[in-house]
Image 1 (cartoon, rainbow, N blue to C red):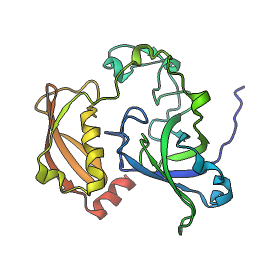
Image 2 (cartoon, rainbow, N blue to C red):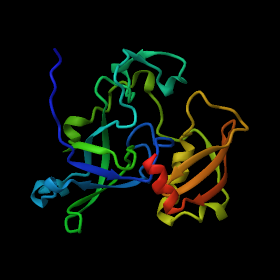
Image 3 (cartoon, rainbow, N blue to C red):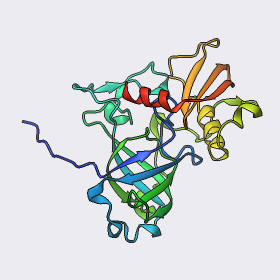
Length: 240
């Protein structure tokens, strides 16, 4: 009989992604993406973070809340292979796993110890949806966690984006200045599902409270619209 081990949610993340669409497929791909980690009341203890300021990066263990399924499959279709080939689930980082757990390495920018909501960790490069539950946080250790000669298997790839992004300045300026580089990098990574490549299709990406509409033809992505999402609409979407 399977053993069950209970875990507590210690924190939640606040990021620019209210939905799964557009989230980088791995952590660390887009350093311009900023996020904040807020602790649950029981864990808002500054002494629990003592010494963390000496580390540049953190490991986050978190919950794939949007992809949890009752049954698991031994094989999945990795986006890296265009969704056309199956690989063993344990040879991938697919969210469709026996246990819906994610593991991400993020850069720790600063620790805000005093706030009305307790200590806050400001991080960069996260690949988590807004509101994601975090089960644990551990420091990244360069001497033990980095293997420069490691093999990447079928997932070996550059961190550089694959698309050239054409976004008119007048549209980009609608976003807060601190969000613009992050959006451009997200678009360059090609957020479309691997099976969707229709040149005339208009895609919609929700980012930092804005709806970004774009098309892709060949290796060029063109931004058509960037519109702020009314707060009431965002609340309705979150409840659906």
